[in-house]
Image 1: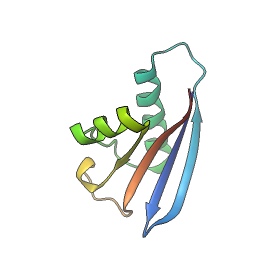
Image 2: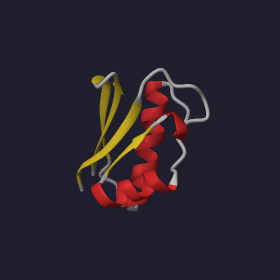
Image 3: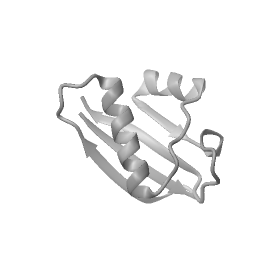
Length: 86
């Protein structure tokens, strides 16, 4: 599985990272582990999965985490997660 994480500010890509996970773990565990790794690399607090975020991710294999998803203040518009390969 490959998951692409992107940080956007003013509709411009500021930073991105692709996480590859070839383990035999479940899809959900892979997504959570990748998100944790990216948050560590980008020095972010882990975002909260709101119902709208979960629904968007289930529907499109893509979701955006806005300020509402974070407890701490963020200095960008949103963090996007996109499953690019299963």
